[in-house]
Image (cartoon, rainbow, N blue to C red; front, side, top):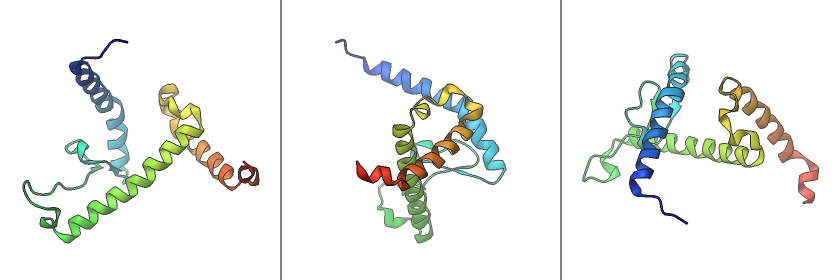
Length: 131
């Protein structure tokens, strides 16, 4: 089995970020303009309008250096993201079509909504409890 050079990982990562900026960010900006911001982690600082990220602590200082309101906002962003990340992972595992979100970018919202409804019914199903 061959090894992958570290620079290959860097190029793949750069390509992935370029694709995200070209395809995903315009849709997120549109959502932000309609009043629905996107929550992201600190890796997305500077992504643009409507992308809400936690505020970094001042370099060389503890998180306590941040204002209490800022710490509360950071915690809120993290906690809401955890729920959405867990839900996305669960849906992708259960509904294979969501593992290939490029199937129809214009319809992924409809597909995801359908998967959420099916997932909700599956969780409540008495058949599930027997396994």
